[in-house]
Image 1 (tube, rainbow, N blue to C red):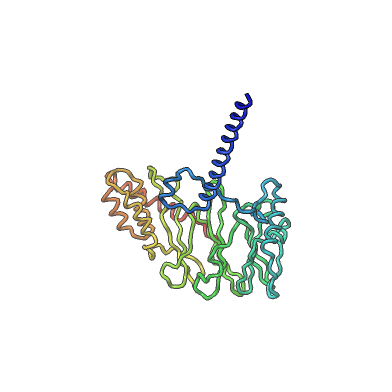
Image 2: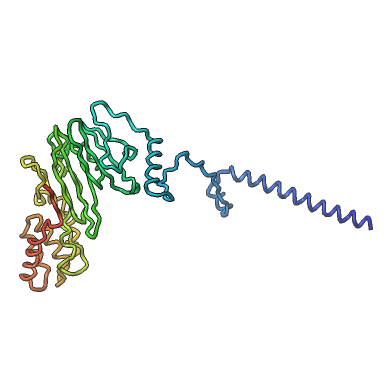
Length: 336
């Protein structure tokens, strides 16, 4: 009986030793694999190998807008975070100190950095009640001059560039008004001895942009006309003719110069021409014809209609002319 007991005990000890050895060997192999850089062949041998990464420690300051707090508390916490990460710079002696444009905007809500151009300083203020908004309040200030305030705008990257070619830099602001007809636009001021408004334009559903198309040092303004959004020509094609405006130094205003910059509108024209087919479908033919008319090329517009439209050409042509006369530029509002 004792011998049986000893045999069973010996067998159990043997099983335990074997299991322990296999476990140790397995752990050593795992360690070796964890520091091994596999080749393509090795990856085939270990198809289920899992790579585990140690997470980085959390930053001291988390860039969050604290959604669990009320808007005013969130704004205060965000402002404190900004001031911790980016301490407010000392305002140079020649520039005005920050002055809140509204009662509910404290100095903590200045979005840094401040922009200094000539004698002017441009500051962006974040609304305490809407700290997550894309657009803020912008102020332009100069010693001895009344501060100018713009709501719901943001500073464009062209700010500080002389876009009119007169040697004086401009501040360029862009905005989106929202609403059923979400309107985009730009505001431009010249930063000379006194602030001088160059342009304020609402461009409807089309975003505009500044570009020096002919490389003469004066930036043109390119946008499109969303006046035909209801599309009186039927079909599913969008009709958004492109417009180009150039700056007139004599009257200090931007004027329609689409006819002079055909290259800037050619891509849009080609978009319609590629889809034009013979038949009685008016939409794509009208889109191309209207772009030609915006380029002051009535001859090509008429030829296009006569070549492709297989209905009452004269009636269709008159409809295009009437729509252009009634709608051209209606979606664009230039504020004096």
